[in-house]
Image 1 (cartoon, helix red, strand yellow):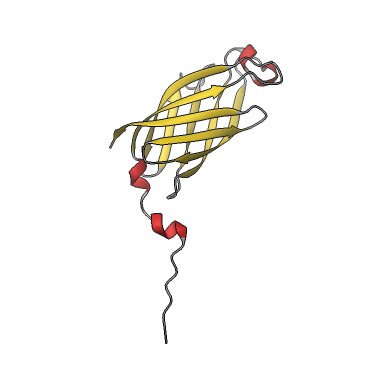
Image 2 (image 1 turned 90 degrees about the horizontal axis):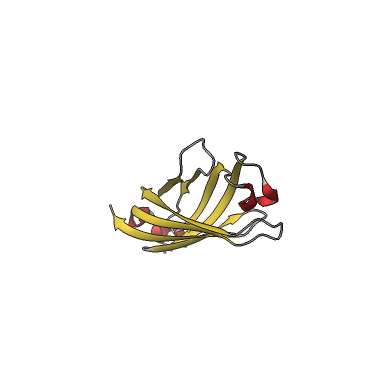
Length: 135
């Protein structure tokens, strides 16, 4: 009898999410939207620990606040959630009133020192991530 070993791609990376651990700079950039929302870009800090990303900008519960978080898979793919509260209506989809809550799915891909992502919504916005410090 012959045993056949099969290695699946996920098995190659199993338990290797620690390579993402550390401090990262994140940038969110949104071009002008077809609905007339102005373009904007801002930077914020994120932390990755044990395969979980968490970053925040502004003061929770206040206009302009945003939290980004979620798990990163062994292969570097991530399904994150960006939730927050709109600030100035001219930068929001459909000119949503200041103080309007939002929540968007973010699809991202991380490497050892760099990552990219997009939020999945009516407006196309891009995230970039750059590792600044390893834990």
